[in-house]
Image (cartoon, rainbow, N blue to C red; front, side, top):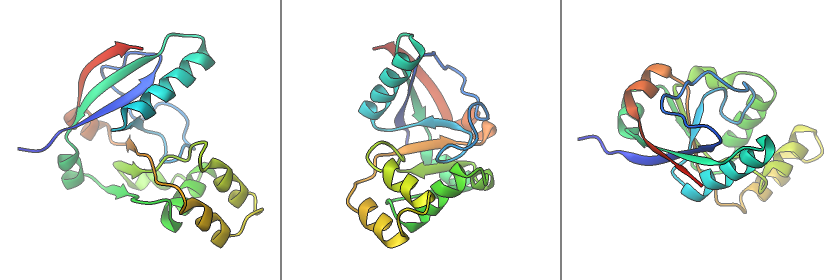
Length: 164
């Protein structure tokens, strides 16, 4: 039996049937449906979105058959804030659509702990060695980006929504 991972999507809407190709294209891992296995991270995001949108926050919960996706899909996993991760994030944010080669991408979020480093590097105000040195001081949190609608429909099972 394939193992299931509990994952969360924080926001302001109940999402029973995620659609992968909605939203902005130039996000960390491209235009997909983002989840995390870190509940607090999803809660924090839901609160931020609720504040911006002047709506109530919700936390959507899913069961992800991650092993099946890793077996069937074209996947990329980033285990650290390293050169590969940084180059991918920069390319994505510059609109290079590097995520289009994948069905599933997992790794650290370019959030408030590391985004200044990413931005300074992108602007040419920080060299690669300094950027990597700063990034190495942080333990990555985790985001999973589902880019294939077929795999999402097959392996991401809605498990309810809770009001926060």
